[in-house]
Length: 221
Ligand SMILES: Cc1cc2nc3c(=O)[nH]c(=O)nc-3n(C[C@H](O)[C@H](O)[C@H](O)COP(=O)(O)O)c2cc1C
Image 1: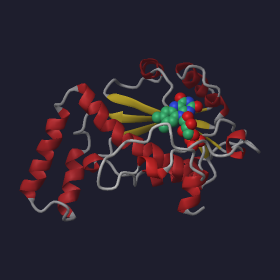
Image 2 (image 1 turned 180 degrees about the vertical axis):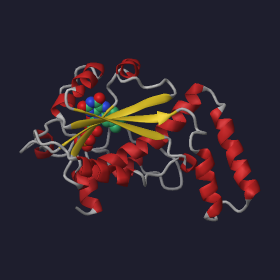
Image 3 (image 1 turned 90 degrees about the horizontal axis):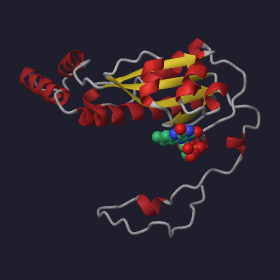
Protein backbone atom coordinates (compact mmCIF):
# COMPACT_ATOMS: atom_id res chain seq x y z
CA UNK A 1 0.00 0.00 0.00
CA UNK A 2 1.36 3.42 -0.79
CA UNK A 3 1.31 6.18 1.82
CA UNK A 4 -1.81 7.85 0.43
CA UNK A 5 -3.73 4.56 0.51
CA UNK A 6 -2.67 3.87 4.07
CA UNK A 7 -3.87 7.30 5.22
CA UNK A 8 -7.12 7.29 3.28
CA UNK A 9 -8.28 3.71 3.77
CA UNK A 10 -7.48 3.30 7.47
CA UNK A 11 -10.62 3.08 9.56
CA UNK A 12 -11.33 2.47 13.22
CA UNK A 13 -12.40 -1.15 12.95
CA UNK A 14 -14.60 -2.94 15.47
CA UNK A 15 -15.05 -6.31 13.70
CA UNK A 16 -12.04 -8.58 13.54
CA UNK A 17 -11.48 -12.07 12.14
CA UNK A 18 -10.26 -14.91 14.37
CA UNK A 19 -6.78 -14.80 12.83
CA UNK A 20 -3.90 -14.13 15.20
CA UNK A 21 -1.18 -11.61 14.44
CA UNK A 22 2.10 -13.51 14.50
CA UNK A 23 4.96 -12.23 16.61
CA UNK A 24 7.10 -11.38 13.57
CA UNK A 25 4.38 -9.13 12.16
CA UNK A 26 3.91 -7.46 15.52
CA UNK A 27 7.63 -6.96 15.82
CA UNK A 28 7.82 -5.44 12.32
CA UNK A 29 5.01 -3.03 13.16
CA UNK A 30 6.91 -1.83 16.21
CA UNK A 31 10.11 -1.54 14.19
CA UNK A 32 8.20 1.17 12.28
CA UNK A 33 6.92 2.72 15.49
CA UNK A 34 10.55 3.26 16.59
CA UNK A 35 10.81 5.95 13.95
CA UNK A 36 8.05 8.17 15.30
CA UNK A 37 9.20 11.66 16.31
CA UNK A 38 9.32 12.61 19.99
CA UNK A 39 9.99 15.62 22.17
CA UNK A 40 13.80 16.05 22.49
CA UNK A 41 13.93 12.61 20.81
CA UNK A 42 13.36 11.14 24.28
CA UNK A 43 11.01 8.41 22.99
CA UNK A 44 9.02 8.38 26.23
CA UNK A 45 6.84 5.42 25.26
CA UNK A 46 6.29 1.82 26.29
CA UNK A 47 3.79 -0.60 24.74
CA UNK A 48 2.08 -3.42 26.58
CA UNK A 49 0.58 -5.91 24.12
CA UNK A 50 -2.39 -7.74 25.63
CA UNK A 51 -3.57 -10.98 23.98
CA UNK A 52 -5.71 -14.06 24.56
CA UNK A 53 -7.75 -14.31 27.75
CA UNK A 54 -6.08 -11.19 29.14
CA UNK A 55 -8.16 -9.16 26.68
CA UNK A 56 -11.12 -9.78 28.99
CA UNK A 57 -9.23 -8.06 31.79
CA UNK A 58 -8.56 -5.14 29.48
CA UNK A 59 -12.19 -5.03 28.40
CA UNK A 60 -13.24 -4.79 32.04
CA UNK A 61 -11.27 -1.53 32.42
CA UNK A 62 -12.46 -0.25 29.01
CA UNK A 63 -16.12 0.04 30.03
CA UNK A 64 -16.90 -3.32 28.41
CA UNK A 65 -16.22 -2.11 24.85
CA UNK A 66 -16.91 -5.20 22.78
CA UNK A 67 -14.19 -4.91 20.16
CA UNK A 68 -11.50 -5.32 22.83
CA UNK A 69 -12.15 -9.07 23.07
CA UNK A 70 -12.92 -9.40 19.36
CA UNK A 71 -9.44 -8.09 18.52
CA UNK A 72 -6.40 -10.35 18.20
CA UNK A 73 -4.44 -8.00 20.45
CA UNK A 74 -4.73 -4.65 22.13
CA UNK A 75 -1.85 -2.32 22.82
CA UNK A 76 -1.71 -0.22 25.94
CA UNK A 77 0.23 2.88 24.92
CA UNK A 78 2.11 4.16 27.94
CA UNK A 79 4.10 7.36 28.32
CA UNK A 80 6.80 7.78 30.93
CA UNK A 81 6.25 10.70 33.28
CA UNK A 82 9.99 11.01 33.86
CA UNK A 83 11.57 12.87 30.92
CA UNK A 84 15.07 11.98 32.12
CA UNK A 85 14.53 8.22 31.53
CA UNK A 86 16.63 8.04 28.34
CA UNK A 87 18.12 11.53 28.37
CA UNK A 88 21.79 10.59 28.77
CA UNK A 89 22.07 8.22 25.82
CA UNK A 90 19.82 10.32 23.58
CA UNK A 91 21.93 13.42 24.28
CA UNK A 92 25.27 11.61 23.77
CA UNK A 93 23.98 10.42 20.41
CA UNK A 94 22.97 13.96 19.40
CA UNK A 95 26.43 15.18 20.31
CA UNK A 96 28.24 12.34 18.55
CA UNK A 97 26.29 12.83 15.32
CA UNK A 98 26.70 16.59 15.28
CA UNK A 99 23.09 17.51 16.07
CA UNK A 100 24.48 19.38 19.08
CA UNK A 101 27.57 21.54 18.46
CA UNK A 102 29.54 20.84 21.65
CA UNK A 103 29.64 19.49 25.20
CA UNK A 104 28.19 22.72 26.60
CA UNK A 105 25.14 22.42 24.35
CA UNK A 106 24.70 18.81 25.49
CA UNK A 107 24.88 19.90 29.14
CA UNK A 108 22.32 22.64 28.46
CA UNK A 109 20.03 20.09 26.80
CA UNK A 110 20.27 17.78 29.82
CA UNK A 111 19.52 20.68 32.14
CA UNK A 112 16.38 21.52 30.15
CA UNK A 113 15.25 17.93 30.43
CA UNK A 114 16.00 17.96 34.17
CA UNK A 115 13.83 21.07 34.55
CA UNK A 116 11.03 19.32 32.72
CA UNK A 117 11.46 16.34 35.03
CA UNK A 118 10.90 18.73 37.96
CA UNK A 119 7.71 20.17 36.43
CA UNK A 120 4.27 19.47 37.89
CA UNK A 121 2.42 16.28 37.01
CA UNK A 122 0.01 17.95 34.59
CA UNK A 123 2.87 19.42 32.54
CA UNK A 124 4.61 16.04 32.36
CA UNK A 125 1.35 14.24 31.45
CA UNK A 126 0.80 16.64 28.56
CA UNK A 127 4.43 16.33 27.53
CA UNK A 128 4.40 12.53 27.37
CA UNK A 129 0.95 12.35 25.76
CA UNK A 130 2.14 14.35 22.74
CA UNK A 131 4.95 11.97 21.84
CA UNK A 132 3.11 8.78 22.79
CA UNK A 133 0.12 9.82 20.65
CA UNK A 134 2.34 10.28 17.61
CA UNK A 135 3.74 6.81 18.26
CA UNK A 136 0.18 5.45 18.50
CA UNK A 137 -0.70 6.99 15.14
CA UNK A 138 2.44 5.51 13.63
CA UNK A 139 1.43 2.16 15.10
CA UNK A 140 -1.99 2.30 13.42
CA UNK A 141 -0.53 3.23 10.04
CA UNK A 142 2.25 0.62 10.29
CA UNK A 143 -0.36 -2.01 11.15
CA UNK A 144 -2.74 -1.06 8.36
CA UNK A 145 0.08 -1.10 5.81
CA UNK A 146 0.35 -4.81 6.72
CA UNK A 147 -3.41 -5.41 6.54
CA UNK A 148 -3.87 -5.25 10.31
CA UNK A 149 -6.76 -2.99 11.27
CA UNK A 150 -6.94 -1.00 14.48
CA UNK A 151 -9.06 1.19 16.69
CA UNK A 152 -7.65 3.86 18.99
CA UNK A 153 -9.42 4.05 22.33
CA UNK A 154 -9.52 6.68 25.02
CA UNK A 155 -12.52 5.08 26.69
CA UNK A 156 -10.94 3.28 29.64
CA UNK A 157 -10.49 3.86 33.33
CA UNK A 158 -6.82 4.65 33.78
CA UNK A 159 -6.71 3.93 37.50
CA UNK A 160 -8.28 0.49 37.04
CA UNK A 161 -5.93 -0.22 34.15
CA UNK A 162 -2.91 0.60 36.32
CA UNK A 163 -4.21 -1.75 39.03
CA UNK A 164 -5.23 -4.58 36.71
CA UNK A 165 -1.95 -4.67 34.77
CA UNK A 166 0.45 -3.56 37.53
CA UNK A 167 1.50 -0.45 35.64
CA UNK A 168 3.60 1.80 37.91
CA UNK A 169 2.17 5.25 38.56
CA UNK A 170 5.12 6.97 36.87
CA UNK A 171 3.64 5.93 33.51
CA UNK A 172 0.65 7.61 31.90
CA UNK A 173 -1.87 5.32 30.18
CA UNK A 174 -2.26 7.42 27.03
CA UNK A 175 -4.38 5.24 24.77
CA UNK A 176 -5.45 1.72 23.91
CA UNK A 177 -5.17 0.47 20.34
CA UNK A 178 -6.99 -2.71 19.34
CA UNK A 179 -5.37 -4.68 16.51
CA UNK A 180 -6.59 -7.49 14.27
CA UNK A 181 -7.20 -8.58 10.71
CA UNK A 182 -10.62 -7.22 9.78
CA UNK A 183 -13.55 -9.59 9.52
CA UNK A 184 -14.65 -10.27 5.92
CA UNK A 185 -16.89 -7.35 4.94
CA UNK A 186 -16.21 -5.54 8.24
CA UNK A 187 -18.92 -2.91 8.39
CA UNK A 188 -16.45 -0.18 9.33
CA UNK A 189 -14.56 -0.71 6.07
CA UNK A 190 -17.63 -1.12 3.87
CA UNK A 191 -19.41 2.04 4.93
CA UNK A 192 -18.58 5.41 3.37
CA UNK A 193 -15.94 7.27 5.29
CA UNK A 194 -17.21 9.22 8.27
CA UNK A 195 -17.58 12.99 7.92
CA UNK A 196 -14.35 14.89 7.73
CA UNK A 197 -14.23 18.66 8.16
CA UNK A 198 -13.24 20.36 4.93
CA UNK A 199 -9.61 21.44 4.75
CA UNK A 200 -10.50 25.08 4.08
CA UNK A 201 -12.28 25.16 7.41
CA UNK A 202 -9.32 24.20 9.59
CA UNK A 203 -6.36 25.32 7.51
CA UNK A 204 -5.37 28.87 8.35
CA UNK A 205 -2.72 30.18 6.03
CA UNK A 206 -0.72 32.99 7.61
CA UNK A 207 -3.54 34.19 9.86
CA UNK A 208 -5.75 32.39 12.38
CA UNK A 209 -9.37 33.08 11.46
CA UNK A 210 -11.57 30.37 12.97
CA UNK A 211 -14.91 31.58 11.62
CA UNK A 212 -16.42 28.43 10.10
CA UNK A 213 -18.13 26.23 12.68
CA UNK A 214 -21.10 23.99 11.88
CA UNK A 215 -21.96 25.74 8.62
CA UNK A 216 -19.64 23.99 6.18
CA UNK A 217 -20.98 20.98 4.21
CA UNK A 218 -19.16 17.61 4.58
CA UNK A 219 -16.06 17.30 2.42
CA UNK A 220 -16.02 14.56 -0.23
CA UNK A 221 -13.09 12.23 0.19
C1 LIG B 1 -8.20 9.92 21.28
C2 LIG B 1 -9.21 8.98 20.66
C3 LIG B 1 -10.03 8.24 21.49
C4 LIG B 1 -10.94 7.33 20.93
N1 LIG B 1 -11.65 6.52 21.76
C5 LIG B 1 -12.42 5.54 21.25
C6 LIG B 1 -13.04 4.59 22.10
O1 LIG B 1 -12.92 4.62 23.31
N2 LIG B 1 -13.79 3.62 21.49
C7 LIG B 1 -13.94 3.53 20.14
O2 LIG B 1 -14.61 2.60 19.68
N3 LIG B 1 -13.34 4.41 19.31
C8 LIG B 1 -12.59 5.40 19.83
N4 LIG B 1 -11.93 6.28 18.99
C9 LIG B 1 -12.08 6.15 17.52
C10 LIG B 1 -12.89 7.29 16.92
O3 LIG B 1 -14.25 7.14 17.20
C11 LIG B 1 -12.64 7.30 15.38
O4 LIG B 1 -11.28 7.53 15.15
C12 LIG B 1 -13.46 8.39 14.69
O5 LIG B 1 -14.84 8.12 14.80
C13 LIG B 1 -13.12 8.50 13.20
O6 LIG B 1 -13.30 7.25 12.55
P1 LIG B 1 -12.13 6.58 11.71
O7 LIG B 1 -10.96 6.36 12.66
O8 LIG B 1 -12.71 5.29 11.21
O9 LIG B 1 -11.76 7.50 10.61
C14 LIG B 1 -11.05 7.19 19.52
C15 LIG B 1 -10.21 7.97 18.70
C16 LIG B 1 -9.30 8.83 19.25
C17 LIG B 1 -8.37 9.60 18.35
